[in-house]
Image (cartoon, each protein chain N blue to C red):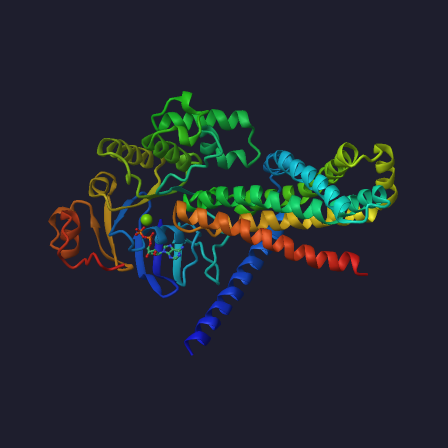
Length: 256
Length: 250
Ligand SMILES: Nc1ncnc2c1ncn2[C@@H]1O[C@H](COP(=O)(O)OP(=O)(O)O)[C@@H](O)[C@H]1O
Ligand SMILES: [Mg+2]
């Protein structure tokens, strides 16, 4: 009986949380239809997009390189030049670029957003905004969401190029491939759909990262400990949602 | 003028405000005293539209600020200055942008905003050379002054102060109390201060109210504070643990 009650109340709690998140997203969309704080948006483009470039580039570069080695030694080495280049290109653009890029940006950006907005919440700065006739969804949340939705595809675009270059470098330097032929194979295999599907995913991941960061920040309670907890929740929930939504999007984009 | 009638607010099962009534006349400097956790901040947040009450009525200058669903009515938005308990300065903005925040969001030029911010900074006794510093670079007392400057910047009719002296040393607290007194007088504003600091209450108040267990249980001129035989007031002003106010409530 007690087990039933506990399960019941945690299911209810979950539904309540989903409802609150849904309301939060609605308020963010509503903010999009009123005032745009462009300056805040540009500041966020810098901190979410531009400053994430190094981590995304490094992640992608090493992933491309490791992928090339795995395919080469793990597979049939006959005709390997074609196989390695094509699988690296497809793997990076369709899956690894957006997913790993999304995950590292989730660690960096949704944590930063949750910590900043959480601190603003517990020190009553968000209340202060309201008393100064400024809507926090317009001033804080929407600029971050818009910046993330725009930045992530651009970051992943760079990640695609750098990941493929990582594979190319390993291919040429340690697997003895011909550099020109490798790039020709890549170009021949890659279709614009592969790249575009990855960029669409990246945009969705940007939305997830910024919404989860903002939502958990806005719901911070207590002091430093509460902010710490919401930062952790933001990173964990955005990482899981990225992986889950990636699965769904891969199904939608490629199973037809 | 601030008029609150039968205000109720519950958080889950925690009934915080229970039929709270208060009437603050125009130009009055009211101080609400009461134990921590009795709902003083919740009362102010209801006035500011930051918390939605469960039932009741709030009128400011004879206009109801709540609509039929008890949500804050944007149509009847009234200029209210607010000094938050911890200052609540925006730490991403320099001092002058904090002070002039409200007009920076409007159509006023940055230059003009800065000039006005510097003038307001002077009013709270601070030098203009701190205007480009960030809040974290200021002492607690200076932060309170900057927060006070932000609250009076748009010359509101109504100013609310949430524990303006908490966390300050007695000397700085006295400076802040006198500044509040002076600025409220200059603006001819109606002021509502909540505090548990009796020195602060005696300096600022023209009238004192006591909030206990979610309702106003006493209210009179500040001079009556010394004469009353109300057991709650006696216990509170003397700071005793024995009496009708149980320190285990809340
Ligand atoms: N947003 C909130 N959610 C839930 N409970 C709250 C909230 N704000 C205040 N409370 C509760 O209301 C009570 C009164 O709080 P408050 O008004 O801050 O007290 P104080 O008189 O010290 O200012 C406390 O028990 C507090 O836990
Ligand atoms: Mg309080």
